[in-house]
Image 1: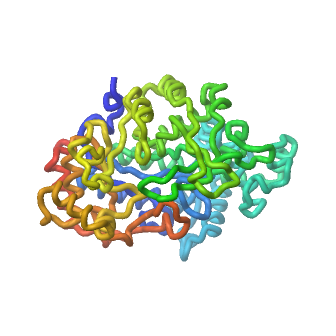
Image 2: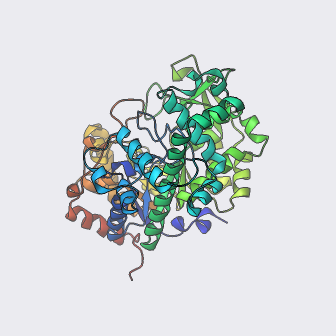
Length: 498
């Protein structure tokens, strides 16, 4: 049985839009009114998949691939306006700019009102709230503690906390819980609200024929609850610092390679309990998404391990990973696990064999296709039905920005492949994606809008200016939307007419 037999989002030809929720222009948070408006926009354009990036709480760099938790949702996405609709805030309190500190104050106030009259612990509260806490206790207890401790120590990484708290000494943690009841209650409430709003959004999408497509970073941040609470699962020294860190060797995105800095898993330790940490993580993500991309899939075959005391990714080496055993455990636990592999970069035959063994769809990115080689896997004639085809991803420039910055040779190869140079960029690339035999074609919203490099979200290997782009609704031209919808219908990617 193949993945598309098990995953409705891949069962037929579809078109999708790539947009992270943080790009929605919503002052009070995007997870309510703004996200529903975007789903209405998608449905009106005959788009049936919304792909987004990881939705966990981030560090100050805002990178969704450097989250504080693999399971928690970002409180920054919560729509505060909906809390006012519930009566937990009032409209006057939502006036003016909502800074991070102000958002935290408002969420604390909403928690106080919602839980008024109940005890300050995880066992007392309205039924819906208590059931949420019980069903998510496996990760939520540690996450609330971790966030409260970060606030106590002004955002310092957990390795800088006092030794007993750094090392999760039970008596030290028990004492801290007694001192931090208000903060712990707010953090638990934030997660309750996030998941409540998310499930409402997912239902709204399904009612309009739109599936949600998420993203799991293969690695987690060192300064995260996952590493703090599960130190034995990572390659760390006695005080919790990494022995080796993750990255990639030189590739398309970087001539020197990339130094990500994430701690690496101790796969032998993970195997001892059947990869339970991963299974729990996958279970949580399936509550959020209909389809899930595993970022850096090749890391399930081998990881690029860089010595922690070196900042040069070229000094790393490939270290094997028990990918076959791991995926067998995943599909045994979740026979219908709806995953897609991010198989970009330096990919060997062993990685592709692993993917094919489990019938996991891969990716192709048109921007990578025009080097003049006819066997380039990103070219349309080399696509497969199970591929997910993109014009570009969140790590690429917009298609127009890419075209304007590329060499004359690349541009000539593109027009030669298309057989014309009359259709402007990015529409010629969008047309190629829609023509592909691949069932699912994903287009970044910036390409539908025709934006140049000013619409770029992220530049790999850089740490400044990323993850900040937002659009305004009046920037979306109705003629462009109609043109996109025409291509969706023309190439058989629209839902059946009602």
